[in-house]
Length: 190
Image (cartoon, rainbow, N blue to C red):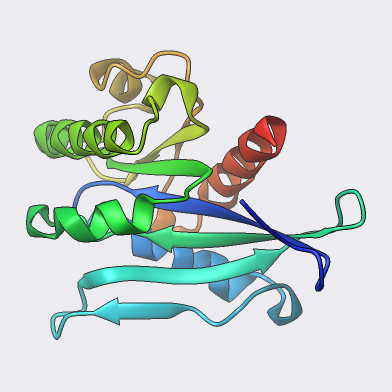
């Protein structure tokens, strides 16, 4: 969290984390295209030639006012590919909340588990524990034939008690629900 007294702004950082191709960038693209242009920044994406996230995607949104300050939520994604672990660590620093975008397809459980273990490891390096951190599980791709239902996927990932929401980010279903849930958790902690 960063407070800019001169501009009367308070900045919160939210990171969208998950395995490669789970829908992290799709979430931000949908949010960007459906929020009033006066309430959001441009969407910045650092991509490979194959349109995969290389370092991160970023945008911020502004919502209302809190105690005379304008809250800005800086939304980041991390690259899901295993070779970018160091990049994910850098993006995670200073985060106040995490949306874990799991790929709900049955055959990708191990990818979700690996990504979640990396998140827990990275948080530990920063002095945090996942069960004490504002966290939302977004079970994406619920429209696929082998999709594991959200609650069952949460159980398989060992995430009992954290908010667990289904989504189809490509159609925008559940995208704003997940964003609102993490913002609510971050604000409760604030």
